[in-house]
Image (cartoon, rainbow, N blue to C red; front, side, top):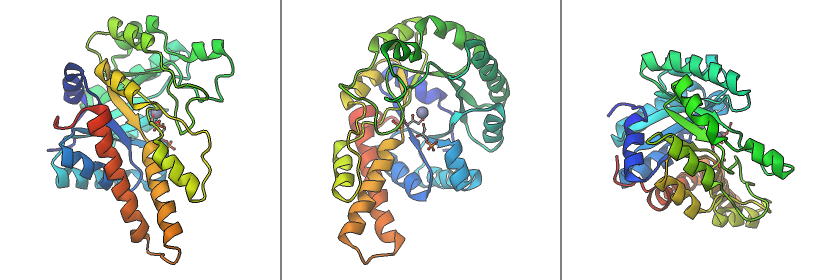
Length: 309
Ligand code: G3H
Ligand code: 13P
Ligand code: ZN
């Protein structure tokens, strides 16, 4: 099985009422933990690479790690650029073998977002690469200082048909109240399912993407706090909300922070309990295993894409 696009994955996910996990990768242990989990439960996968990941690990190293995972697992794996911010970055990833790119023009005025996104689509499609666009801005809890500003950041359903039609994107990320990182909500977690419903009504059958979808699993937050860290107030998206989104038009659910928390908590615990150990394999091995268990949990209990590869 070669590296694939997300086209067929999304068609099946939409029809089946489940979602594909898009997990961020930065090094070998993360790639191995995620792909070993997916293999065990026979799940399709999107591995996504941010500009920061490319800078940290180098495009070729990440690509080769993913190619190794494809040949080890035999799974359909899509390689996706997460949050591409320029045409040049998207072009470089397309030329370098990615099968999917995100062009994130969500911070731009509507017309400029359309222009930039269309430019990427025009380069990607003739090369067999699919494109994710974004409308609406994901706000951090500190970003949205008052209700009207928060309201303005959500995706406006009235814009989605025109955006999709004029850009030709293959999927669309929308803002319904999630945000990146480990501190997503000050009070009770709340997502605007009414906006998702309206978008789904206006774009029947079209795959929607949810960014900022880590649950910030309390077990790992507590472990970090117990072993010298401080993540007081960390809060993520409850799993039942993600399951609901997956049963609707959301076909791609982005998860990075949960991987970071699992890895960091495990390494902190290991080093606290084994203060004289200094072989990186001794703490990276358990960290890789924690990622594997976390991803299996997500696939089976949140995404519902086990057995769908
Ligand atoms: O949405 C952002 C992802 O979590 C990637 O984060 O830019 O620090 O690699 P990064
Ligand atoms: P989290 O920070 O919630 O894991 O979101 C990741 C993401 O959206 C990557 O694009
Ligand atoms: Zn994101």
